[in-house]
Structures are given as structure tokens and as C-alpha cells.
Image 1 (cartoon, rainbow, N blue to C red):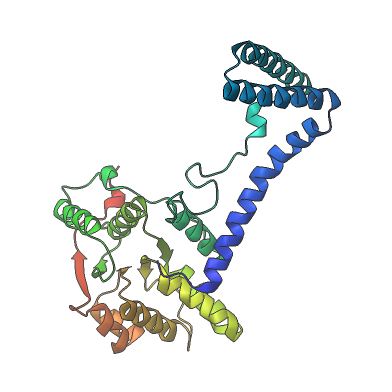
Image 2 (cartoon, rainbow, N blue to C red):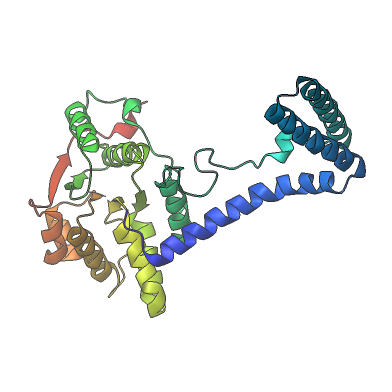
Length: 311
């Protein structure tokens, strides 16, 4: 994922809010204890006993050590009893971070980005774009491998996911309605998400709405929209050709998007019901040329039965 400065700012803000929410709850119960005189007396006794034990360990005074341990146990008992009376448990005093690996900081102890980082980024991206996150299918859920030659296709693109990375091939999947194009692209997207890649799965109609937003946005906002669409590890555009066609918007910005992703080596998947002539008539030769470029991508056509007719 290529993160722009504006997106990184949004991500940091989200993590700050998560930590604040998690720690505010525990801070509330800490204040209850801090303002309770009886608990504070027991806490002072505990700290005194702990200091006494340290001195005994240092001096080797066994008698003093036993006294300190006894006082320490009694102070712990008083503290526990008072916490119970106040309804304050250790669980309530512990911040409930959404991610136990990074404690909602975005980074693990060794300074690396946590595996939740891409998930947070994706959610922010979808919110900014006004898109609901899709429930994607899985290669393990395939039901019609014996139809439309799908078994070999699934195997091929499962292997594609195993080797996926920067400069992986673009994929254009064409074919008639119901032959399994969207399911296949969804399986690829889901598999890549499981491997912690940042994936945006979007319909062509949703993309067109974003293009319209981009078209009327102030200059300082345009770069944010473009960086989101060109910076994710994988962009899936489903059902290209079903979206409304807006003059000076649809073709122009689709061309920009595909060109930018190619220039950055960021792969994309396009599914469409349109054949070559229909794509040419609708989007022009520049877009068709990019979709058919064998140097940067592969094109697969799925022919056969409409799988939606099968129960």
C-alpha cells in the first residue's frame, strides 16, 4: 500500500481515538480508587510494606522480611476488599484495546506496522469514499468447479495470490452474465486481504460516483481521492460497463486511474460483461489498449452457463 500524507494523518487520528476510548474507561475506575480514602490508606500500607521488604532483602534480615511479607499480604487483602466493595475489578482497570498486538498504536514492539494497520487504512478509505465493505467469497466456498472450466481457473488464481506482490499482473475477466466473474474476483480479493494486503473491492457504479466527487472537488481534495484509488495493493472494479456514463468523467478518470496504477506497478482486476467491440465503443481505444496490454496483464474469458440458475 502506498500511503499519502493525508491518509497517514487519518490513520494516526483513528488510532489516537481508539486509544483514548480504551483508556478513558479504565481511567474512570482509576479515579474512583484515587478518590477513595480507605483504598488510599491500604495502598500506602502496601507501598510501605514493599519498601520494607526491599530493605530486608538488601540487609538479609529474615525477621524483618517476614514482617514485611505479612504486612504486604494484609495490605493486598485490604485493597482487594475495598476494590470489590467499590465495584472496581482488575478487568475494569485494564484498557480494552481493539488490537491486543499493538494496543491500538498501529505498531508492534519491534517497531513494525501491526497487521491491523491495513485493516484500519481500508476502513478509513471506504468511509472516505462512501462505500460499504463487501462480504467477499472464499476459494473454499466454490460450488460449481465442474462448470465453465472454473476448477482450473480457481487453481490458477489461487497460485496468483500466493505469489502476489508489487508489479503482479493485472487481470481482466470477461464473459456473459452469471458465469462466475464476480465470484472469482471476490475470492482473489478475499485471499489477498487474508494475506494482509490492502484491497478495495468496488463496483463500477460506485467508482463512477467517486469519479463525480473527484470531478467537482476542490483541487486540494482531488489528490486524496486519487491517492486512495491508486495506492491500494489491489483494486477490484466489478461489472465495468453497468455504470452510468458521464461525459468528461467516466472515460477520462478511468483512463487516469488505470494509467496511474500501471505506472506505480499496482495491480488491478476488472470484470465485465462487455466484449471487445462493446468496450471499444464505450470507453475508446486508449482504455481498451490498457485492458488488453499483455505486458502488464492477463485477460480471461469465462463462457458457459449462468450459475445463478443452479440451486
